[in-house]
Image 1: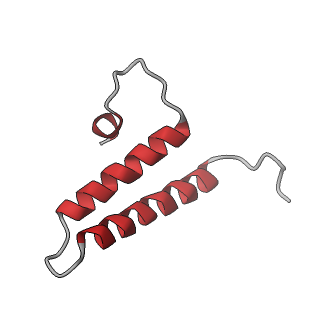
Image 2 (image 1 turned 135 degrees about the vertical axis):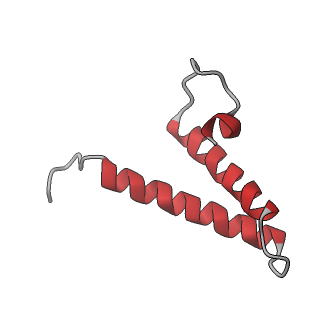
Length: 71
């Protein structure tokens, strides 16, 4: 999904922020295409983008060390 979302070759180095934005957009498009018939397309995309952003933040918090120690 990352290759398709960002659309770059293997030797480019996109910023973390641009990758996060592109993945959120791709997840939103996927959710809009695969939504239930009774759910609004924009609402499904917005919810999916929010959940992707929330997952990204939780993943970074869980995987990166605290720069200020164990305060």
